[in-house]
Image (tube, rainbow, N blue to C red; front, side, top):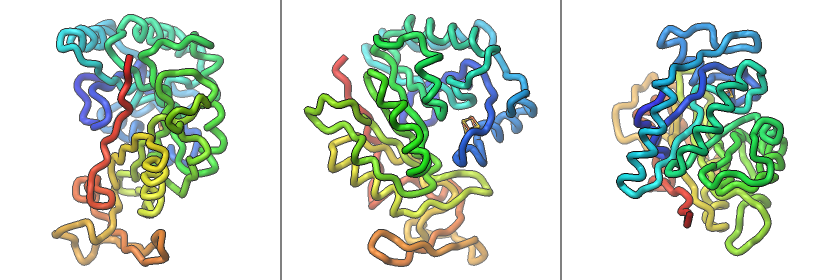
Amino acid sequence: MGANSKIEWTHHTFNPWWGCVRISPACKHCYAETWAKRVGMNDLWGKEAPRRFFTDAHWREPLKWNREAALVGERRRVFCASMADVFEDRADLNDARDRLWALIEATPNLDWLLLTKRIRHVRKLAPWSGKWPRNIWLGTSTENQLWLDKRIDHLLEHDVMVRFISAEPLLGHMNLQPYLQTPGSSVAGINWVIAGGESGPDSRSMNPAWPESLRDQCSEANVPFHFKQWGHWAPEELIAEGISARAQRIAVVGRDGEIINLVKVGKTKSGRELGGMTWDQVPELAI
Ligand code: SF4
C-alpha cells in the first residue's frame, strides 16, 4: 500500500512490510489481513508466517512525497503502517525497520504517524531514546479502558511532537481525562484522539455513548478529536433512507439512559457524523 491515501486524517500511507500477528481484542477482525487475502497474499499473518517485503521503488515513494511537500511548502502526514505493526519484535524485520528510521530522517517535510499496539516495544526498537526527530507522531491503539490502562504509560514516556490515541475499533468506554495534554501543562499528555467503529460483515457494534464521551473529554481539554467512521453499525436515526426491514438491529442504552437502535448498514451508509457534524480535527504544529 502506498500512494495517496483515502484515509481522511493522513495524506499518504506507507508500509515497510506486510503481515502481523494478533495481539488484543481490536485485532479480531483485522482489516489488514482481510485486505491482504483479497489481493492474494494468504499467509502473512501469524507468529511463524513470513512477512512481505518491498522493492527499492516502493521505498523511494516517500522521498517523492517529501519533495512534493517541499515544493508546495506544506507538511504532509504519512500513516505508517496500515498493513503491519512497525514495532512487532521479530529479528527478520530489523533491516526494514532500520531502513524506515533512515527514511524518516531523510524526509523532514513529512510527519510520520507511527501507530502501534506494541507501544511497550518502542523503547527497545526505536533508535532515538531521548531525542526524537520532530517529524514523528507516535500513537497507540486502545480499544477500551483495559487496553488504555495497559498501554498509556508506554506512550507517555516518549518525548515526541505528537502523542496520539487511535480508539478504533472502539469497543468500550474510555476515560482519557487524566492523560489529555491540557494547554500550558508541562506534563506529557495525549495531543490527539482518533475514534471510530469497526467495519466488515462481522463487526462489533459501537455504543454512541463511547465516541460521544471521547469527543466531550477532548473538547473540554482542548485536544483535537477526529471521528473516522461509525463502521458497519450506526444509529438508525442517522440513516436517511433505504434500510431493509430485514437489516440486523440491536438496542443499546445511551448516555442519558435513552434507548438507541443501532442498525447494521455497512460503512458506506453509516457515514461519519457524530452529534450532527463531522470531526476532522488534527493537531496544528509550529515546527
Ligand atoms: S496489530 Fe494491527 S495489523 Fe496486527 S493483527 Fe492487530 S489489527 Fe492486524
